[in-house]
Length: 498
Ligand SMILES: Nc1ncnc2c1ncn2[C@@H]1O[C@H](COP(=O)(O)OP(=O)(O)OP(=O)(O)O)[C@@H](O)[C@H]1O
Ligand SMILES: [Mg+2]
Image 1 (cartoon, rainbow, N blue to C red):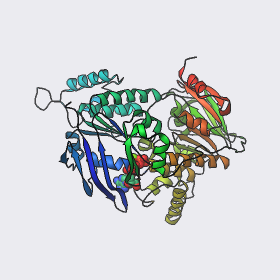
Image 2 (tube, rainbow, N blue to C red; image 1 turned 90 degrees about the horizontal axis):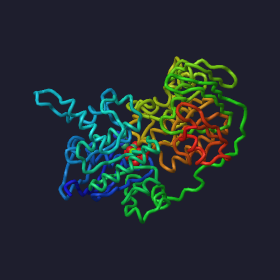
Image 3 (cartoon, protein in one colour; image 1 turned 120 degrees about the horizontal axis):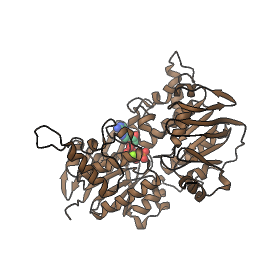
Image 4 (tube, rainbow, N blue to C red; image 1 turned 30 degrees about the vertical axis):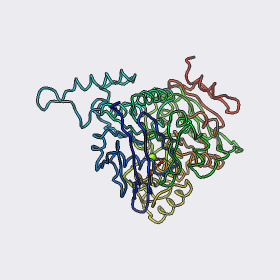
């Protein structure tokens, strides 16, 4: 088959200042297979793949494609050699259309000199969408798409570039269940065409189901590699963390107090309607629903990102007026957004700033910066969420994906808010860190905070919440006590029209 390439990476060394991200890593992948790459946050998975994709130049080591040594000094060269990477933090031009992104840097030219063949590019994008069954308008602007759809556009880009090796870094972390299944079908299709898929995921069930081969990285080294059929999830976890993980979900024996947060008949132009619910002090309430059901929209409306057109919000019985996020923060509401890059972090700024900036008023630094206090707070909250950084002042984008998430959680712990919304708090986080996040949520609840967790992972909601709200098409369609509900019941409410 012409579309194949055997990949070998040998003794790769990659150093970032004080951090040795990869030590002597040797990795190979076979054509026509899915090779999963597992490991804790910061283990070096993305870095290894960025070396392959020409983003990082290794200090040492060699890369071979079909026994030919290759050297990439930029991503363009790797792409030309047939290697495409779908990045963990999506990497599309937001203001451009789907087809423009698919052809970015490789535009088709028309027969008229210097004129781009738009019609041709739109047609080819459409054909590809039809072939793989993607329901995406080639002329839609990226910023109007959901994160899941953006992922598909990245995939279109790779397929259009005739990639032989496609690296997917956490591809399903922002997809709905339906979209994820569609993606698995595509992965299977690509595998039978002889492509190599390198698949990074913290969702070990997926890995178990999809992969032919598995390699596990720990602290920049490969600690295990072999056939997926010979490594079950417990074995993978053991290699990842170096020990067994017990009691994944913390036990909840918190005292549930008075009503803290109340939403009364909220509606917004973005399509949510008549949303009423409350969260008590000490309570962790989950919100389930399919992607697009309006869960994030509820959070956006509460936090003042999108205006309410009806309804009111109360905190401890007091009516709040929220016109923008700063109003919400000042009055004791915090919101961890689902999309770190688009609306969460300023990735080029120091982690410390990312943690403190939205909190200046709440930590008493509205008019006067106090550097020492700021540093102390960052160190305290950094260790509280056990983030791995070389220094609190390191730029946020020098951290691994999961550690960036911890910086955001640290920000909202620092805010000491009364009502905290966590939208997909464990996205991109490894099993060990997930457990830590669950304990943090539990701890916040036991301090009497009221917590709303939006999550697409039902086991997670059942594992940590007292109650689960279910959204469907902008409406609240269920409110169930976790110990009296079943996952099937929740799925049914989320998916089926009444
Ligand atoms: N551009 C960079 N500058 C400095 N350090 C970096 C940079 N990129 C990665 N690192 C460091 O290299 C190590 C490996 O990070 P990497 O992103 O490869 O981890 P990962 O396995 O992909 O983790 P995650 O599951 O959280 O995405 C981490 O300690 C990280 O902080
Ligand atoms: Mg990563």
